[in-house]
Image (cartoon, rainbow, N blue to C red; front, side, top):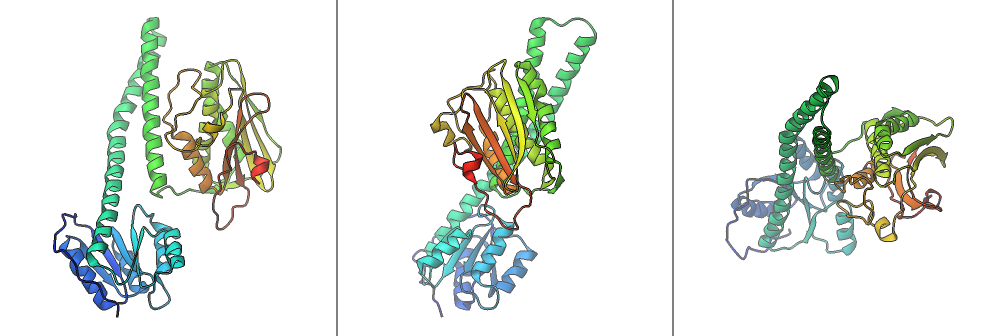
Length: 391
């Protein structure tokens, strides 16, 4: 029977009341861990095998799991870990593997499959409790961040909507009544633009938070991709017209329907087209084209802007990046749009990339399989790689 090395300190922790599940077939080890964890202020549940753990996970929520790698019965530790990770991310539900095996292959496999930490028996109980506190602290910080985002979005959405509604009403009234001075019109336009930018910040922060927490789930249905592209172009036509930029559409005939989340695809295309407009000089052209390539639908957004330096291409799809090129109309940016596009296209089993054009400008492209694979690992092509090279 595995034994827990006695604790070296009886110091109590100020840990919050969090619920921990200990899954191990060793009665003595489970009891020893439970005593120390309860002393630290945690609520502890115990399970002797995988089936009992599944039942407890279905019955209640936990904040952390201590999981033996070698469990009796048909559900071993790795199987249970994979089941947990199918529903909960490492940030939402930390899992610390406890095992009698120090084999590096087992450790690598467990960490690759989503374990947050790994300890080998026999272990010092105070060390395990310290590792539990570390994971619980990280989860608490994540929960605080999520709460902040939810609160901020709730508290800001209503006044922003009210501000935009009032501004639009004032603009409509001015159009039908007394003429508005140029200064008043400029102030009103600034108020509306600011409100829209605040809405964008909230939406993108919430999207990135949901993506990192694994909370975004696509609502896929048979989708006319060409219709989504036309809708995205229509959304951005006024923006392009205001900068004297022409939007051109080039469609391959007979595009098949694909299984996709229409709103999320529209979000991606809106971002790519809007981004092209943002960084394009006036009196230029942006071409949006679609085609079929190797059982994938391809959409490309080609601009006539300055193109992208190599150092920018290497970090283009990472969040909060400050790039060399600046918007040509002094527009603002959160630095999250392309990072969100990468994640959303990955969820569609697709790829996203960029290349500089031979003459001038850059082309952003996405490729989405017509027939999605049952299982996949979405791949982001190397920056600067063409769609053909990434195949």
